[in-house]
Image 1 (cartoon, rainbow, N blue to C red):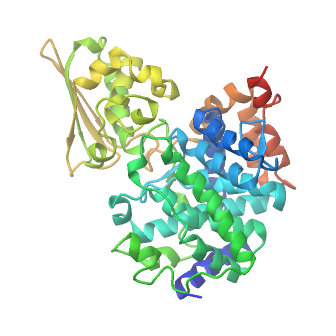
Image 2 (image 1 turned 60 degrees about the vertical axis):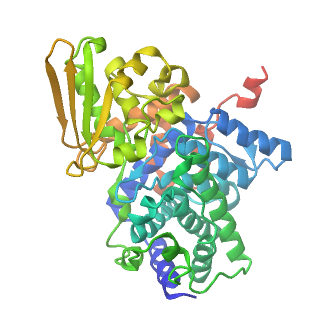
Image 3 (image 1 turned 90 degrees about the vertical axis):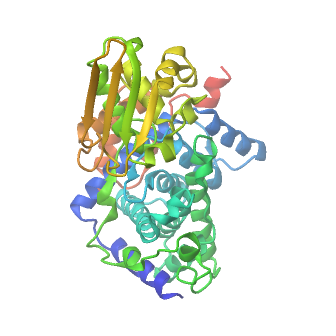
Length: 454
């Protein structure tokens, strides 16, 4: 087995035998409740329905749940649907250094395998945490060039983390964990060209399904290339010409990339969040959006690169339009899921504001910063500077703000108070005998398929 894969597995397997450090466990719980919220919030999307319809057509076994739905499907489709839903609204967690969204794919592995593996709450939280940490460590070792070359890093690194979570749940030993991660290194998926389409959230769903497959193959004796990570034609060097394996394997248990995770206040690409903050600030100073003649945002170059679509045609496209986020902030004085509904995106008021808006890239502006300037028709100028976006490491969401977000995602689907009950279960995972109470709360009292045929 390659030295890189062996060291990777050794560090993670050793950590799996120990209690999580309190600060890490706290951040893991925040990530856990956040992604449960985003998964349930998007559970009725047509893309989720398409995945479950495919499962029904194939007549798969009814084994594993999908949060927010009444149906059960097999392990593969549970992983695919849960990972898809968790990432669909671009409302899940984000590791800023890599732009990985780690939790959606790892929750999907846990959801799919929990009925079979029956982990205790503590074991489940540990497997979730280490699956997130694993993919983030792989990510930092090949960043930023990997993402800059057009890969969707949530899919390409996510599959490694998912193989780790699946291996820990299935009870693989250290050598098996190394094999699973190495097998998964040949099972990645995702390009940035998919952004703004239903294919983007498919990437973490497929990462989850493939990670489970990699762990099962390792469990049955399948072998991977011995040097799949460090070989010149292997995983890491194929995906980036600047690789640092010390970031992947160094300081296990001392450096936790999960502690640099963040949670979004707005359901869209994170580089647009400073601009949205700026738009909301200006909305308090401008009474009538029709009075705006021009609007200019001086921002980090990633904003126009990743989210420069000036006139999106639907909600998925709008999630990659910083200009739409600002227009929605000015018109509605709030930015949530409603501002990214297909019907809202094409209305005349936001289209008009978008047409007057320009993104001015400036490399001296930080990624969580923006300077916004509105020139009004009466000749006056209104400006605002966002030093650090809400939800950034410098201004993280508080526990109360995070729970407000989760309530808005969960309670409309599953009933008032459900989010609070889910949070209580997540808080008490250390002593939970299994995950039955968690998934019972994630399931509608009346199955969705019955509601659809009522």
